[in-house]
Length: 239
Image (cartoon, rainbow, N blue to C red; front, side):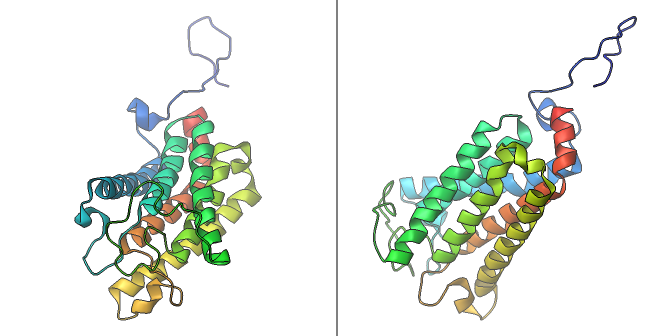
């Protein structure tokens, strides 16, 4: 711990700050800037989609009328994951990152269980009734590739709210899983940008929405950057 700098004072003082430099107006580190620039637009997109479902505005939930919409639960999970990263970068609290990450992972896992057992838990339209079901065999249900990506991101981001995030092995696993998620979402996005339209779906299941793929790409990249710069970020936040 550094000395306080006061004249005739030889005591050491803690440098722990309740907010990171980005909040205090101090120059942020490169890692903080990159993470926030990637995550903030994702959170904004998720909020717009959630409002689109609540206000029944089709243009806010699907990019084109003949493309799959981002369902309400997907937008909710994406918002939770974005808040997981932002809350960890901008504050020293460990409670909120754990809460947001676990909430997203549980909702995604519950959705995937419906595909595996062929049942319906009643969670697909729990919050809002789906008013558009374009290319979606199950109204209000996220695609299985979307559910897997969100589950993996929730699991890989959960350590951000615990002391294990500084562990080298955990950081390695975070980077590997984030890379796998990036690959899955990247393939899905190619289904919209190339003639390989089936790349956005697994078999005959629903497709991952284009903006869902974009958001997941950004989140996985932010998670990868966070794992790379975890030690430096902790120095910025905790001193």
